[in-house]
Length: 336
Ligand SMILES: *Cc1c(COP(=O)(O)O)cnc(C)c1O
Image 1 (cartoon, helix red, strand yellow):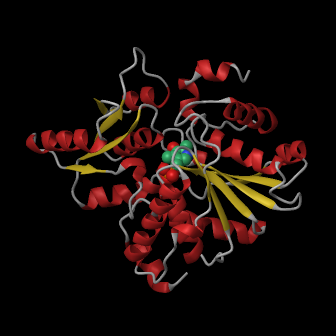
Image 2 (cartoon, rainbow, N blue to C red):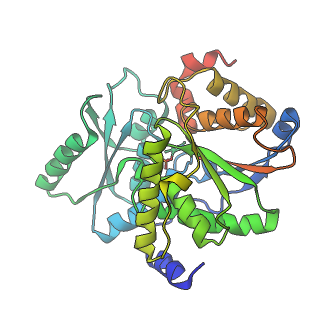
Image 3 (cartoon, protein in one colour):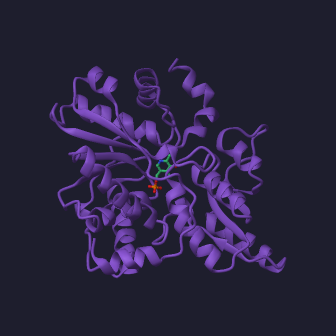
């Protein structure tokens, strides 16, 4: 890694939140079941922070910014079952900050899954109309908090900002050390949505010296490829500027497969049900219905179409989300 970039990364304010490094484990039973390729999993669902997930890595740098700015309250936004909102609420609780969440939709009669955890973690929840942009409600909440004498800090949707993606730059440096001990992988597959994880990974591949041929394949959860790739490129390039690195990525060079979006965000279909049941029964690993089951369903389909040689080594990056399993009992019953 270029010395100046690593020095800049090390100097960025960072609040320890995640249990790192997360382990890499072989998926031997699944590999045998499928007849290859050789599959392993990077367990970012085990980062800690109120049941784990990829947002813990981003929040280390985002809380660093918030604390440096003298904030006493965090504001962020997401869907009803947002893993990002739940991990932000947990990070706030751990560091003595208050947390306000702007969630889209209607309050259910009984909160479940991530929303139940948001309540338990002491977050204040503001419901916003499906049609209204998050920014409108966030601004109103921010003004109210200012007026009440608080110092709020806004964490962007999904934690995807140039500072947030530094969590995944650091993750790739962590991973490069593991890969040098375990052997290199031919491709890395993961869920991509607000794009910060993939952006950090791509900048991290460069900074960790993993080589530009390293395949980082994002399975799009909701957005069409071109729009998402433009967002990922923009975030990665802003991250390079933040670290003072002379590097640039073009949206055309970003690997995203948008062929597994089914009927839309958080609409659980047969492919997600199959992936959840298969991982649970072959490996005892829980996937979440919204993100990681969709990414795994995409990987399974690519394998069955013969995209990878049986001898290739593929790393599935499990980005978390497990509490959402408990919010979709009706949809998952059919997987039983
Ligand atoms: C947020 C999230 C993702 C997507 O990460 P982005 O950085 O938004 O692309 C993937 N998996 C899970 C479980 C998530 O909560």
